Length: 152
Image (cartoon, rainbow, N blue to C red; front, side):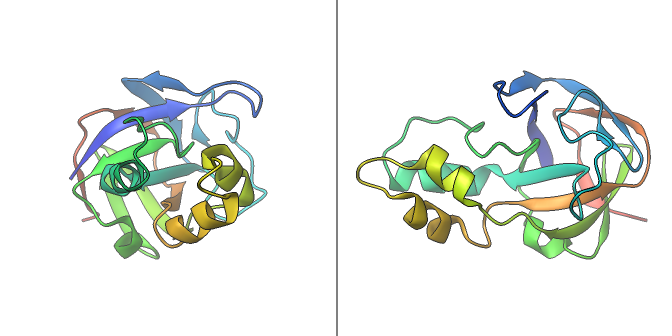
């Protein structure tokens, strides 16, 4: 159960950038991310998604392997994120609380749509599989390869 990739997007019009390590701040999220210190929605500090779900979607629709397509901050491997809703967990030295599922929106549907795959079908396919919204409870460094564990 590890962090495979980390992405940050500075604004909604810019592309995501990949990082090996980022700094996170309790109650605020990832420094430099467009949602840093915003509190419009629950669990807005950080978003996570399972690499296995992205890979399944890409394989099903014969798309190139691109783990950044979900626009989530952290791509995990080997952990069922849905099980972390309402629970505290650790990523390396960082303590987080899973707040709610990060359900797919029409924006994600439109981004992944194609002539053969309408946006509504993308949203339906990724329902309950598009990740987790979490609150950051402690500050520190989050790095690729960090282990994901239950909070003590």
